[in-house]
Image (cartoon, rainbow, N blue to C red; front, side, top):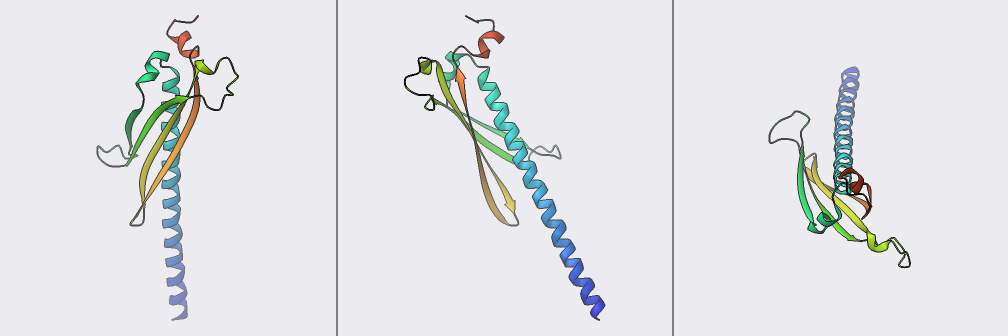
Length: 140
């Protein structure tokens, strides 16, 4: 009877360990996908011409489903905003040729039955005379 009780407790503990491990792996996968989306959007913005940066804010959604389903997986929604380059000191001559790009991303996952909303933000500076001019052939 004692051996069966020990075996039962060990089985429940093992099941709990496996369940927690799978949950942590899924959470890490969602965090990694969020980082990839943020980087993708920031790199895309760096290739935009200076005149197209005024068309912000831009809202977007991306879906990640490791099983390649059509409606399943995690839905990521985000927003790209352009603002003044506030980290640069006001006395810098080039401040008017820089913009601060902020990419914000939100997604929800379910830990058990409770929804948990996550948010990540990436900020980067974009220059008027940056790499986009060399790629599109408009370098000064």
